[in-house]
Amino acid sequence: NVNVSMFLIPWLMTVFTRNFPFDLVLRVWDAFLFEGWCVVYRTMLALLADIQDDLLELPFEGILGYLGEFTSKVDGKKVMASSYKMPMKHKHLFKYQKEWRALSRKGGPDTRVVMKDTVKRVCRN
Image (tube, rainbow, N blue to C red; front, top):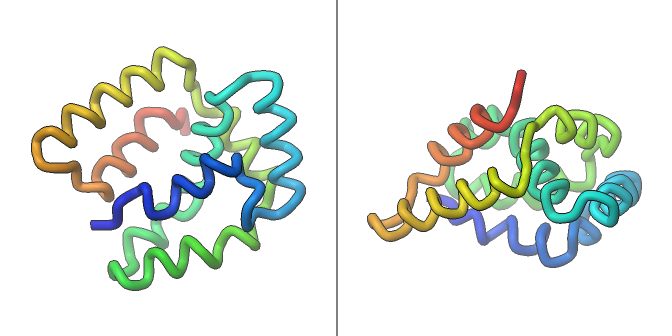
């Protein structure tokens, strides 16, 4: 029942400059200036994919705390390598946006299921 806006909005609004290690910030911004928003979304998904198992085991109360603490320990090189394996293009963003809006109209999506499902679809692993 964690609303993704509780942690993703600060990531998006600052394009990772808040709370993340400088090596990740540099890598994201370098790619962002070249590729645009797709790299930001791929990076978010790579971060979530990396900690997915931990998040799914935590109770509601522990999730936001974990999301606040893990950011300082992120390996920028590893995250960016994972993000480049995700085949995301602008058409994917529009498709996921439509899906999210449809789920929201039905009373809201189960964020854990949506996160796991999205990571599976976007990751090639």
